[in-house]
Image 1 (cartoon, rainbow, N blue to C red):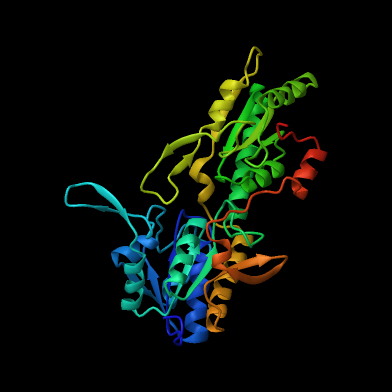
Image 2 (cartoon, rainbow, N blue to C red):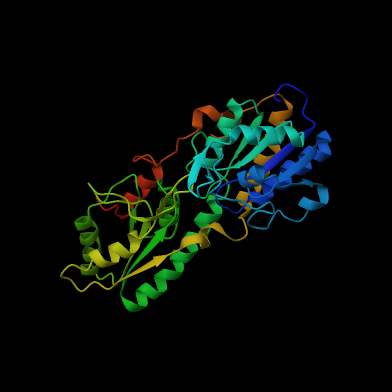
Length: 366
């Protein structure tokens, strides 16, 4: 499959949705059609569409006027893992089976010479397996968490930072009016990029991220010290994956059928209960949730997504395969999928933004 000339490509969006997906689909499809006269197949709902044989041909008009629209016209799914797909047995029990081979056969039946996978770490882990099975694959890094290795930024991240920062900006006014501690819970899973960038951008007083386990006494002291200095309120930006020193992340629930069964959440409410310990602190928790995933992509994300989509096609047509398109040190390039599969990129403790935040008085709970 990977050795013959590419005439038809398939494109899919896997995992959770995020702003900029449509911009990538547009760039992939238009570049493929106008420059290389390729046929483009759009797979519905990520790997689920590949498993269930759901697709449609994308033409030029299908992807016109979608650059600024959030979400994905192809749909997505974050529970369909070809390597661990739930199948009901004759006895009614659910067994998990690896049906990656059947997916490879499906692509061959469709006549797809290459597969473009737009997604995050889970999507790329499956893409890397397809590559081992002989599929010509090209990955495009998508996630609001910005936690994919090899690239400085993923598309969707800038929009989510903007959304979260604007939400925290609004929280400032009600916190000030009621003299409260407002604890804003932000997505990001096991990495603190989204919380760090939105927290600094919004002037949050305390920022708690997974990479720097916090001391609850230090967090409480930071709030009380502000109060003593006449600061009537405090804003805490906390990543859903933040954890206390010696403690564990707060898990909201587990979904056995998901490639990543753990769903983090609840840390903001827990902090709101713990901080008023024999003091008169009035605390409220705000969980931004899926609002961070939605909306119109920022111009930065539209541009980045467009460059990613275009580069994915260019690399494929030049013979590069089984790579992830990346933006590193101001340049577009690619890295082997095998090198990044199953890995995440976390925030270095000496990151310049952390150093700058500490210099202006921001506490990280340590």
